[in-house]
Image (cartoon, rainbow, N blue to C red; front, side, top):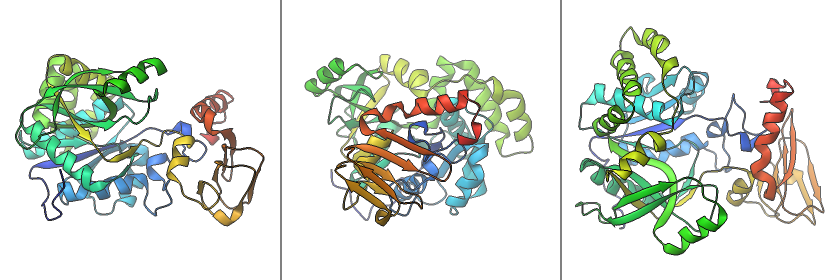
Length: 373
């Protein structure tokens, strides 16, 4: 489906952008105090958060984007997104995983706009290319959501990756306005390599990118059925959100909320009951999960570079990923190296070991070096 560039925003559609996590596999570039969604990781002049909101605004129109983030990052989010109002940034007192974040946004939207509002949840730290296709995909997902489904976006699996969860598509949904939507048979957590290869061969599986589109009332009804205590707590907080009792409700209710991902809380059990649909997303997508992934997104005459290319020298070091922050960096005889130079920490690894960077963060934490985290 080719999008019509003249299409207006989708009526009654609000985007929710969960902006959390520390991006520990991108340490020392990404830190707990300034995580990856606040960084320009592609060299394009916009942070991942800003780019996320940029591509959502044509779908929502102004005033219809909510960012849910930690209290620690709320000021930075507001600074990066001056077009958002003060009521458009929901600050969580502490991390409670994606179900609490998205559920809070759904409950606040329900209070503000009533039961017909449709929300789409899109992570703040993903890189997407082909925004015209992205817009068409989301418009289809909204139509399926209006029909009462929890809708996820399935990313075409291009390799048997073990880094992502998988969605298995079934029969066509048969909803007008969503011709490519299909029933979801089930979700699978990150499989081993052999299983991932089998999935890819069937053509029935796509990557689960954690994008969900659903009517707010439907999401909360499912949450009430699956986790009633979590549902009740979020509704209690949302009822007070725009009034004087917000801080009191957050203080007495938020710490006791269940920590659980929306995939486990809603997507998996509701899919088993036939209530989840998938719309295939034919756009380019990357979750920038580590430096190997980042290397595939960066340009550079001599190799993938973030920072000053003139400060980087590669000799017999093809494919090396370099992040330079002021000092010169020379990589000699180490193909596919990863060198990240920051003012207070240097990381040296290889693209093959990029997933293990989190272990360095854990090790420095164990040594009590919280100043590095």
